[in-house]
Image 1 (cartoon, protein in one colour):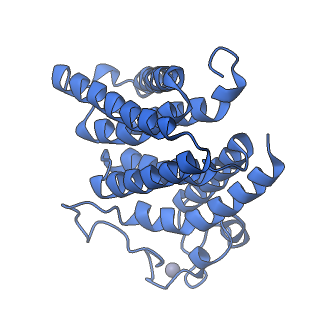
Image 2 (tube, helix red, strand yellow):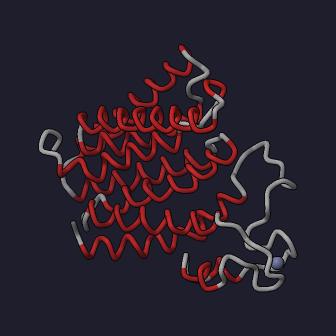
Length: 257
Ligand SMILES: [Zn+2]
């Protein structure tokens, strides 16, 4: 655990929170219905601009008790959840990864999973316009890290891992289309890269963790909601959580480390 990494991660999370909030409110989707999506920075009720988003994540929300400063309408807990997740994910990523050449790449990867998961939960879609740019940025940053660490093979392994993970999910989508979607396959290009950066074992366990988490949540939700097999839960957030979990704690697992 790195205290300096934790502080840097918290700062990165605070910077990412407003951006994530905008992405969550206005997902970069091709077929988006602009009317149905609330414009960012504005109160849904009186349309007043929310100074909230330009201030401190979580703290501002709590200070305003989740209400619009102009008309006192509830602005919902989505902002709070978004901000909280960004701060926690940033903090944990910085603390576990520590201050090293790979931190920028892994921080971008971890933080982009927040809006991605929130959009997927809300709209059952993982925007290609978010996944591909994120994958490109992470690839470049991992490339820089590989050069700095003098180990270009890590980058090759990361790229191969990403392609392998993505191909595997594509195969599942073809075999069983009801289970996962194209978005999950694209997301696994990014997740696979991050996991394989650490090692092949991480790639395997990271994907497995995602499947286990997704299945547990899916079964739990099906039972709790009483809808049985009719329930369709997005898989992306759980694939992301599983991969992130393994990326962060894996170096502490002897078998993997
Ligand atoms: Zn208002």
